Amino acid sequence: MFRSAVFALVCTLLAPLCAAETFVEGKDYMRLADPVRTRNAAKIEVVEVFAYSCGHCFHFDPLVKVWKKTLAADVDFYYSPVVWNDGAQFHAQMFYTAHALFKFDRLHDSFFQAIHVQNNMLNTPDKVFPLFAAQGVTRAQFDKVFNSDAVSAQVLQAKSRALSYRIGGTPEMIVAGKFRVGGGMGGQSLSEEEAHKRMLRVVDYLIAKERQAKTASK
Image (cartoon, rainbow, N blue to C red; front, side):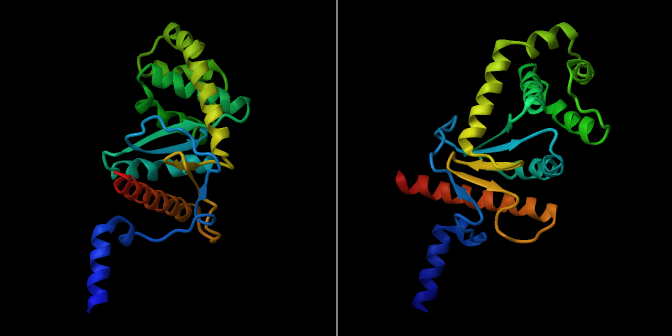
C-alpha cells in the first residue's frame, strides 16, 4: 500500500516522464559530445535539420506540422536546412529567402511539392522564382534577397550548426542543443511512418526530461 502511494506521488510529480515511453541514451537518441548553444536559453529548443530534396523529410513534414500544434509555450521549435553539398546550399538559400520575404509559411509546402510531386528540382533561380511570384514577390525583390549578404550569412550559420550537431542524415531533430534523434535510432525494424512517429515520441520524452531538469535547477 505504502509503495503504491509513493509510486503514485512520484508519477504525479513527474507525470510527463511516467506517462511516456522510456527511451535509452545511446540507443534511442544520442547525446552531443559538445552541447550547442540554443537561440533562447529560456525555452527548450527543438530543431529539425532537414533537406528539401530528402524524400524522408517530405514524408515526415506532415507529421511535424500536426505535432507542432501540441507543443507547450516553453518549447522553441524551428527548421534548419542541412548544407552538405551545392544543391542543399541552394535550397538553404531558397529557404532563408522565403523567411526574409515573410513567405515561408506559404512556400514551405510548395518547395516540397515541386521537388517530390512535380519533379522540379528547384536548382536554378529561374525554377524557384515562379513559386515566389505566385505569392506576390517581384523578380527584383526575389533577386535582391536571394543574393543578399544576410541570406548568405544564414546559410553559413546553418552549415555550421549541422556540423556542430554531427548530423548523420535527414531528417534529424536536436533537443536543447544536447540530444540528437534520428529515424534509424532504436535498432528496430519499422516502416518509415512508424519510425517518424517514434522520432517524435522520443523528442517529446526529451522535452519532458529537459523541462524536469529546468524545474529542478530553479
